[in-house]
Image (cartoon, rainbow, N blue to C red; front, side):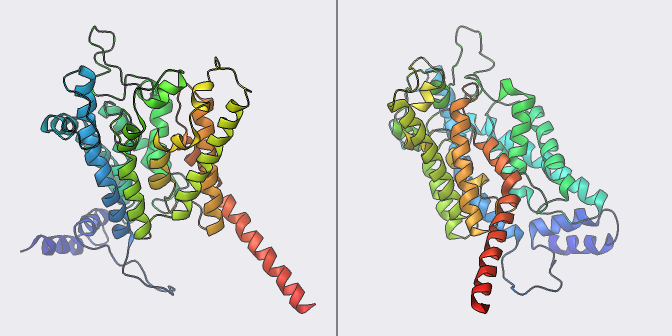
Length: 401
């Protein structure tokens, strides 16, 4: 008897019991989602939540694979055991040693993220008696890509439980949450364990355990260097290719752009949100550049380093591009109206660079900006809809006058 037949028999056996959602979830994960459409729909399509989530995961896989190699590369580069890769295709980057050490550090993050998150999802499904949604398929992949490579697994597990329960389940599950669950998890880590989420010892594997020793490793990011008004050792191509320290999946801007094009082509990600977020970041960066050029801020100011960064360069350092493509476009927590998407994305980019510059202790603000705008997204859509209603009422009055 096939696995599909066995699962079908289990579903029938446990139909109406507490364990029914668990068996339904296994069947959904391996085969097709249960049919949930009953009546009242006017448009029917072949896509479903599972297929949508799988498209996003496919867009994230290249970032994950690159992040694995980069974790090993940054580790051996910091130890001085290899030479810096000359370009994206450098011989010292795509090596078996980098793959092994990178997989050893990154894959456990993926396993904990999915294992703990799905366990919580199954538990709530059994307790509340509803189907297990596929929303965590993407969240489980995003979480390992937005954390430092050496974060303790128990911290990640605690944060995942918090993010799934507080960020999603208390609102009713997938489709009902007002905050992005992956960013809720990252926010919890940042505020609960700040020393593991910032500084120059958390971005390169092995740096924390060697801190204070003769062979200590420094994994300072570009944003950290600018925030301290230090010179940056990486050139623009290093920043674009991604052969720099940082969160696991945020560094390669090339792969993020490819993922963005894939999401836009499949109509899963909103190009309006992506473009408007980048425009907002550029505008805020340009304003800071004009302030510096006008001489309104002293060279000795703690804000000078990041304010003097060329406005376009903000897009290839830090997480702004990753956030714009994979976080801001979350269809549940983002604005739903077309005009609202432009406003929503612009404010995310604008506020992200503002936080980045004015918070030198933690010069990255995209996750805080997205969470803030998640809260205001319904308000933005409300005023957009009300504006449309008022314009239509005016046209009706003109015609009937």
